Every structure is written in structure tokens, then in C-alpha cells.
Length: 306
Image (cartoon, rainbow, N blue to C red; front, side, top):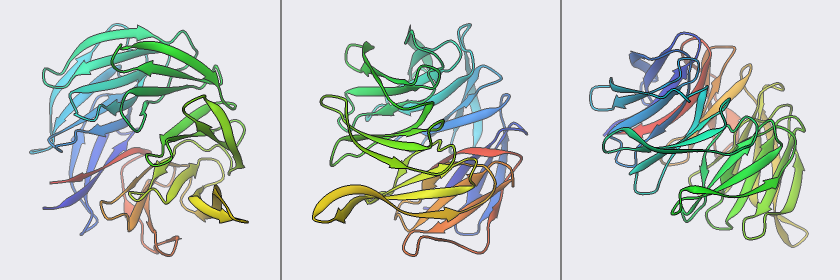
């Protein structure tokens, strides 16, 4: 089997399929306008790409790396964040400017339901560790929407920091990590009562949070300080186990999407303004000397093994 990273090049409307071993682009897929985020099904057979300015979702068959369907809806207004249920049977999509959540049946690749958050600029999709809830950061409302997956409806909102965007849930502690881009902060929430347990300073404009496969680290790209905050999730500080920023790793200009390989030994960071991918050695927490070439304005990124 081979390992790939799928990199969305926003300003040339393509997906670069990059072989991790050779670090070469083996194919470029032409997409709808302005591809932003990507989700790969658990079986690796399909990828879903939100084309935000084209107001469509492209369905890619990963066998031949071809677009097999384009999903459209009159209420798609900058579709952006995507996330799959644990069984891969449903895809959740956040449409930013309409602040509507769409649920797509991945067998038929058809929209089965949609509903509003009634917040401003609902942007990303993150599932709870048990898969029963979806957390949606609302950039313009400085809060988080909670969706009940079984009921398929909004059940709560709670305040976070300024301009929340990056979110992730740690499966062992069930903590929700939120990167607030306006504040340059990380908030860590208890998902039972939605109270803040920890606050940490980050770089300038943190926009994503990705856990390493073992969840020891959270990698948080800081868009305007051109680095990645490495937060150790189980740092021993005077006998208390807490999340703690260990390091900021300089990368390219405007880092965005981040993904790890299966082993967790390498992390790949899409640098929007230098049109390349930084490769980080997770053991040393250093960027490797050679970057991987990408297309114009690479951002969203995913890992695929097939």
C-alpha cells in the first residue's frame, strides 16, 4: 500500500495528489472554484472537497483520483468545514455565510437534511470522541454550536474566545481544544459542562488544531506568525498533568492545513503563501530541510493510504 497527502490548492482550483515516499505530485485533479477543506472516508475510497467560492462539494473516487459527482444546493454559501461520522455513512458540512449545517448521505452522495445554527459564520466541523455530538465554531459570534448527531439538530451554544476556528477533541480526556484566531489563544473545555479548564497563549492567528495519532501533541498552525505551536497534552507541571505549549516551529508563510502520517512520525503543513508543504519530524520537533512543492495557495490537506 502507498501513502499520499491530498493538498487543496485554493488559487488554482486543484488537488495535488502527493506520494509521501517520493514526495512527488503524481496527479493534479481539477476541482470547482476555491477548494478549502477535505474529508476522506474511513475506508479510503472517497474524498469530499468543499469548493467554497464555487458553492459545491466535489466527490473524488480515490481509486482513479477522479471527480465522480458535484453536490450543489441553493443555500451553499461558502461551504467550508467537513467531517464524517465514525461509520462514514454521513458527511457534515458547515456553510459559512449561510450558517447552515448540511448532512449528506455518503452512499447516495445526496443531501438528506440541513438546518441553521442561527449564529454568524459557522465554519468547521468537529465530532466528539464518541461521535454523538458535533462542535461547530462560529467565527463571527465567538461561540460554539453543539449538534446532537442522533437527533440531527442544534442542542446548545456556549461562548469561547474571539474568532474561533480550529477545533479538535482529545479522545482520552474528552477535552475540546479551541483555537481563537482573534485572541491568539487556546481554550480547553470540559465537554460535560462546557467550562474552560485551561487557557494558553499561542502565536498570531491560530486557525487549526490537529492531534498526533497518539494524541500526545496538538499541532496548531499560527497563520500570521508563520509557525506551528506544539502543545503537549499530558505535560507534567509541578505534579499536575496539563496541556502546555512546548515549542513554536517556524515553517513557511501563512501555514494552514496540517496532517500526520499514519505512524505519527511526520507532520505535513500546507504553507499558503510559499506554495509548499513543510515536513516536521515529530521526534525532534524540527522542520526538515526540504519542503514539498504544491500548487498555488495550498491549504486544506488530508492523509490517504491505499
